[in-house]
Length: 128
Image (tube, rainbow, N blue to C red; front, side, top):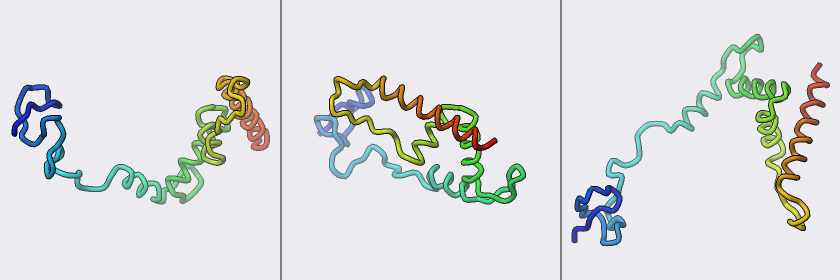
């Protein structure tokens, strides 16, 4: 039974689909299969473990150099990187409230920003 392809919108008949537009058993929308070769994640993981000579720190893994840059930006007061560091160390802040009417999301976000700035100030003071 041939049906009009619902995905292409061209009005062509696609014998691989049923009357509801779903793939028939044994047919696929990706006849070439999964792409060959390593995934981007695998390539990034491999590169992260390569040893490089980095800015006077000597031989370090790329991941360690990246972590040093992130810490530097967090210590410099960049809130994005401060949040990234805090989320990696302690995990993201869970917004749990017993009485949702008394604590709004804006209040919690405001407190997180104050805490982040306090941490940045404290760490920055100890670095110097």
